[in-house]
Length: 203
Image (cartoon, rainbow, N blue to C red; front, side, top):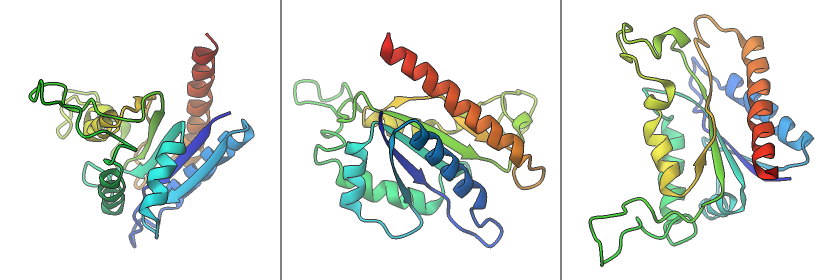
C-alpha cells in the first residue's frame, strides 16, 4: 500500500471547464483506492493551505500531477501552487537548498532534494494531436517528444529528489477527442506502470 497525492492542476476557462482532467483524477483515485492505497487530492485552482501541501508532499510515496498543457507549460494557477509550496518546502522538508556546499560552490546544483525514494507521474491533456510530436517534419515541435516539452517539470521534480515514472498523455482533446479510448489507455497505463513498480519493489 502507498500514500498517493493527486494534484489536479487544471485552470478553468470558459472554453475549458476541466471536466476531462477531473474525470482522469477520479479514475486515478479509484484505481489507487482499489489497490488499497491512501489517496489525497488537491485542486490547485481552488483554495489550499501551503503548509498542508508541503506536508502532503512529505507524506506521499507517489505524486500524480494531472494538468492540461497550456502555452507549453502548466496552467498559471498550478504554477502559482508550485511557486508557493515548493518555496515553503525549501526549509528542508522538500530540499536542503540547491545541494551545493562551500567546498564546491560550482558543483552539484540541484542535488539537495529531500524526497528521494518517492516517485511522480505526469498525466497531461493536449489540444495538439499525437502526430505533432516525435516527427522532425512537424513544424512546431521539430521532432521533440512530450517529455522534451515537459523538461522543466521533470527538472522541478528532480530538484526535490523525486523519481520519474512514465508520462501519460491524451491528445487532440478539443478538436478530435477520443475520450473513451483515452480513459481506457489511462487505466491500462496505470495498471502497467504500477504492476511493473510492484515487481521492481518485490525484486
